[in-house]
Amino acid sequence: MKGLTQKKWFLWLTKYWFIFPIAGFLIFEAGVFFYYGEKSYIAVHDNMDLFLAQFKMLKNTDSFWKHGVDVPFLGGISRDNLPSELSLYSILYMIFPVYTAYVLGLLLKVVLAAVSFRLLIKELYPEKYLTYRPIVYMVGFVYGILNLFPAYGFAFASMPLAVYILIRIYRKPSIPLYLGLFCYPLVSYFSYMGIFILGYMVIAIIWLSLKDKKPAWSLMPALLVLALGYVVCEYRLFAQMLFGGEVTIRSTIVNPDLSVPEILSEIFTVWKEGIFHADGVHTRLVLPICIVYFIINNVCYIRKKQYTGVLHDNFNLIMLVILFNSVVYGLYDFEPVRTLFETIIPQLKGLQFNRTIFFNPFLWYAALFVILARLYDMGVWQQWAANIIVCISALVVILTPTRYNDLYNTCYCRAYEYFHGTEVDALDFEQFYAVDLFTEIKEKINYNGEWSVAYGMHPAVLEYNDIATLDGYLGFYSQQYKEDFRKVIAPALERVEETRIYYDDWGARAYLYSGTDLSIVNASKTIYATDYNIYIDAESLKTLGGKYIFSRLELANADNVGLEPVDSYTSSDGSYTIYLYSLR
Image (cartoon, rainbow, N blue to C red; front, side, top):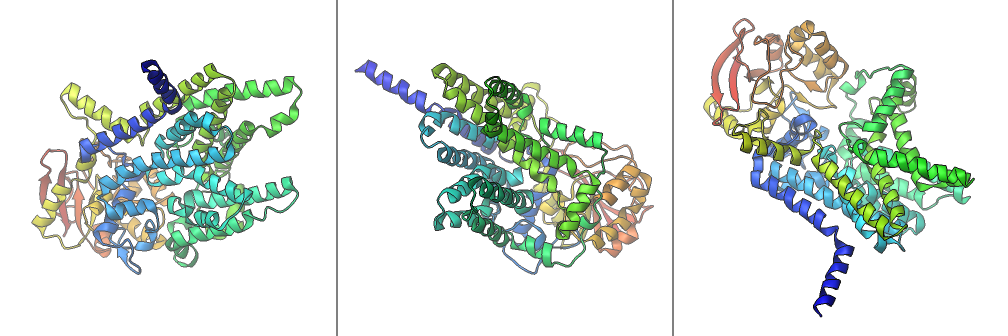
């Protein structure tokens, strides 16, 4: 009886072993982030300096659901320019404190990816699903733990879900499926993924209609349903984009115009490495496996003279789409192609149509699944080889210190502090926003919503702390305000040509720039600046309504540029010192 029980346990483990790494990771990640709390090290770039501060502003001003109101940054921006309230990710920030919502977002995207991938594969391989189940969940899990752009984690993770719903509709349409497709934008985002999903649907409709020799009727209404879902969920974006009437910085953004060799090099680079917002770390393991398999698989087809097999192989099709996305990314930097796109659809001028590259992480891991599934079909030993490969791929993702790998960065920094007895120079979440310090400052100066700017730190720090800012970071705001703010920073731009180009050709970061260093804004305790003078036009700042400058540098020329020192304030752990100045 005991031997029989042990055999049952062994059989159960061989079927469901994948539960342990997935559950173990989720428990460990939740444990780390909730144990350290706001002392965790969270990515700053395009994260804490952007979206987290925006969500906090919406909460501070109770503006998630409001209409016709402005939020207090960049001199007053329409609430419509910020993330939609009809988004599951936004809802997290409505309900929970910012840090808690952020961590829950990291955990939920893993679950969303694993479940979405499971639905897709079960639909594609119904007869083999039970055999493939371990690698189905594990590949979905690995895709879910990829450290991609955090604010769009749900949008990345749910890509298999979109494919699943569309395949179901193509095969057997029903009202519940169309309703599910209509609701899909709740976990997606139009300008990053949605518009390209719709584009792929058009291609699929044409291709399937030719392949089946009859119109793909079920997908035609699906195209309209999904488009309507995006319009409803992101109605603020569509209203601003189509009916706003305001000239925005998108009209003056200057994109690079690369030569043909440079474009080819860029195509190869993004194919091989991806981009930082969509870094699937496939280069380290998945890419070599795919290259080796691609060669072996197609050599076998050719040796057997099965040339049609090369054209119809699903793995080759995935590789082709990955290459297509990479080519589109490169062509975006080719002036004639970009001009043609903007001429055909002038409303989308400034849209980065090369964001098709964001689909590649999903495609690389879909390709990995195809390889592993074919190994599973070969025998027991090959199945265990596939299991080992997928487990190693998970470890590669977990242990690669990419920009958005908050778990790795937190564990590394805390381990460093424990073993070396000294803190790292980076600021953790709590230190970065320094809520206690800014609460103290506001109380001492009796702050009452006066317009302010930041120097030597991200304006997001002030925004998070409910301080109205004339500066800020946003990719879609008034061109007129960009020009007005330029007058404030003109003295600095005149001194550093690289900074002038950065602001004039892009302008999403309306910051006070150094007149000497390329950047003095960082997320570290140490201030890296060679010049403690500030180069601004104080009269222009006053014209915009500015009163305070919150600086991490003690300004050497404050009096010369029309600033009066108010006081200096230091956080309890010494990580921040803020020098406060007012305009004379």
